[in-house]
Every structure is written in structure tokens, then in C-alpha cells.
Image 1 (tube, rainbow, N blue to C red):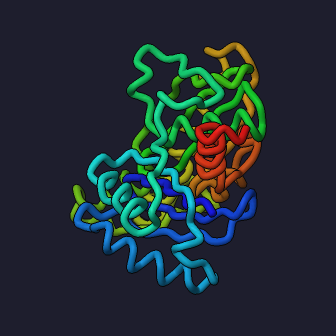
Image 2 (cartoon, rainbow, N blue to C red):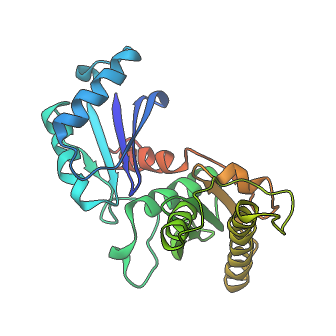
Length: 257
């Protein structure tokens, strides 16, 4: 079985695959102090609930944008599962080109998204990822990664607003029925939701114009369904697109495809 790890700035996702069948998926908060032993105790307990034993894991792959987490995740794979993990980077056979000025600056998660969108949907396309940052990754017709846009994430913006303004409360992201809010919470929700929707539609329009082509837009991340229901610029919501790319990269690294 394959253990696929997607280590982001906010969460770390662990998934176990038996061939093309996913047997389990678990999510933990990214924490600098968490050790390989911490991961092992937590993950092994959850795996046993799905009748998966550590001895069944034969391979691993890590996609990380958090340098301080990588050491312990690699140690988890070697020390607990007995396998050396493949590390997602531009130096692997991705099946696509990284066509940007500084290929080394492309995050591993963005490379995985590009690989996945090329495999599942084809280009030209944009992967709209609602994470710690709201990212727009552009893939051309041949599937090559062409760069993109990074904007502050929605929850990050809400936290900054709450922290900087004493009278503004923490709020949830929701779709208001009206643009003009009738109270503070309503005004904040409108600013966040309709403001970010304007950012999304505006950037997708500008990217498409600059690219001189209509673009498929594949949205991922926890907030993707909320925004997809309010605009026709999003073609598809795919919560698994990053993991799909990670598994595809592992298959290439192992010569399976």
C-alpha cells in the first residue's frame, strides 16, 4: 500500500492507497513541534480503525511546502513504515514542464495540482486552490505549468481583520443574501464573500485574457463549494486534485506509468 502525505501550511493530509483505491484519509493541523513519533502514534491508531496495519505500507510519497515538517515526515516513513519516501519536486519526472523563470520557486503542491489537472481535465486550465493562500495555477494545452497568482487566503484575511480591529468579531465564511450588510457581521461576511468572488472572477478573466484562451477552472480546498455555487467561472470542484497529482507523481517515480 502507498502512504501519500500532503503537508501544507495549515493542515497535513495523510492518505493510504491500495492500487487506485483509497483506503483511508486523515487530516491533522500542521504543528512545528510534532515529531515523527507523534505522527506514528496518531496515524497508526486511525489506520487500525480502517483495518490497515503499518506493515502493509510498502511505499510513501511526501508533498510538502513546510520545510520544518519534512524531516519528521521522512523519519516517520523510514522509522515506522520502513520505506524511503519519494519527495515531490521539480527534479522528478512530472510528465509536464515547469515553464516559469525560476522553476525552483514552484511549490510542491502547485506542481502536484498541475500534474493532476493535466491528467484529469487537460489544459488550458486554472487550478483555484482555497488554502492558506488563495492560489491560481495555470496549465497550458500541453499540460505544462506556466505560473500563476498567489493571494492572501480567506481565513488568513479574516484573522488579520479580527486581530487588527478591536470591535470586529470572528466570523464564518458564508454567502450573504445581500451585498449591503445590515450589521457588522453582515457587512464583514459580504466583504469577504463578495469581495473574494470579485477577486476570483477578476483574476480568472485577466488570466484568460493574458493567456488568450478560455480556461477550465478547477477549484479545490474546503471553501471551493461555497464559491463555486455563486459563479459560473468555476468549471469543476475537485477536493482530491492535489492527492491525485501526488499519486500520479509517485507512479512516474516508480516507473508504473
